[in-house]
Length: 320
Image (cartoon, rainbow, N blue to C red; front, side, top):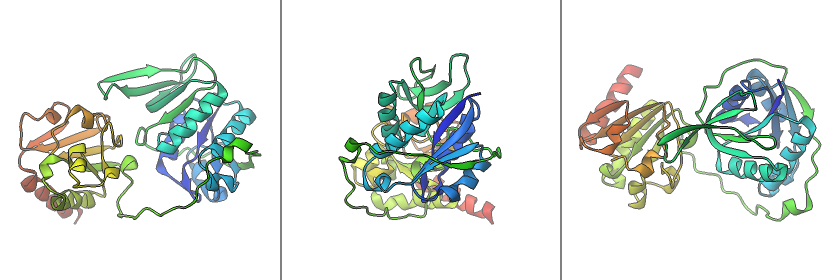
């Protein structure tokens, strides 16, 4: 089997969960080779090796932090030249998709975005996608060049498969045109103590039925009892009840958690497009005819202000 390049999403060497999922999927189509850009490669190597990376190509240049994504594209392009992989896998974050698109253009290759599964095929990797507002599932493969594929978080459970994980330096030359957009400042995001929305295993979302910003505490309490992220429908965000950064849907973020709880959300197609690939979906709505009930695994017809606090109390009780 050939080698598969996996772009490492990390914070100073602390590897984020989507990368471990990519390593798990990469093993289905070849031997994972991690590409770690920035500081902390030696720290990250142990985690990457534990999840199947046969080696880690590492480069740490100031340009990776000082400029936008193009220097990272330079590095990945040069990693491709060094390895000649059967595919390049990148997390489906906003930055990841931009890196993947730029890389595909440079390689003259096809690109598949937001894959939810990967398998080996006779003519190259086959990706599964959820398309047209999650109304259809498709299987596709790249027919030209080295496939560049972005994968949605929570598409696979990370599995340990210890490998060598040898760290090797990656020689990177940053192009003259790659430093055209400079990062002039950074502001740390205020931590809520909850998981990142797109990476969370459990998401609890509120919609129009929450009926006010002050009432979102009911949603937050349930989320905190479950160790979950908090989401919101477009109606709730447009009303100013919750930040846009928490919006789930076609014009917000796409999530694919193990458990998605929709409270007071009618289930418009715009919202469904952002959460329909969730593994288990639970809806709480007092309208028995709400469209959300068409796609749920479990539905509760009732007032969320009665049901959700009882559910929160039960979760806390079971946790002891």
